[in-house]
Image 1 (cartoon, rainbow, N blue to C red):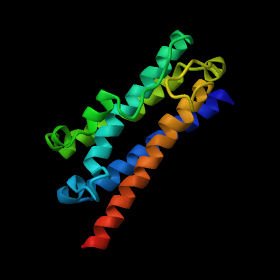
Image 2 (cartoon, rainbow, N blue to C red; image 1 turned 45 degrees about the vertical axis):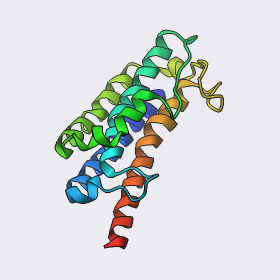
Image 3 (cartoon, helix red, strand yellow; image 1 turned 180 degrees about the vertical axis):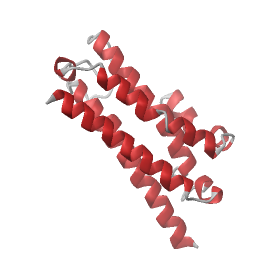
Amino acid sequence: MTKAYLESSAATVKETIDNIAELVQSLSEELIRWKPSADEWSVAQILSHLNEAIPYWVGEIKRIKQDASATWGRGLADETRLAAVAEAHVNALPTAELLAQLKTVPATVEHLFQHLDENDLSIVAPSRNPKFNGQPLQFIIDHLIVEHVQKHLGQIKRNVNKWNENK
């Protein structure tokens, strides 16, 4: 069960990242850099966020596996998280570079998952986020890695739809 679950989760991440890359490669640079509103990210910001966030959660899982007493997670105001989506930072990065980095994410995830077992998935460590406290490591995989990339694919599709509605 565990091996199949981890393989399926890794495959879902790879498929979703591949779908993101394929979609973004079909978009104009103008659309990729366009922000639908002041409160929404551009496609480029979403890519930069994924390039920072998914490796971050992989690292958190590794830390939890090594020391289940270590507090995991971060808030929305985390400086590293915010720096990854800062417009000045993102706009200085070529789309090709953002995509090349994104394409390395599935291998990072798969490598981690190959080193996890059933006991690891049930480890519970304290979380900085009270609503995540008491959740097992499997929660991080399901929600903060797999579901996370899927939600951002949906966000990119919404940006494209909004762009098309405005043109």
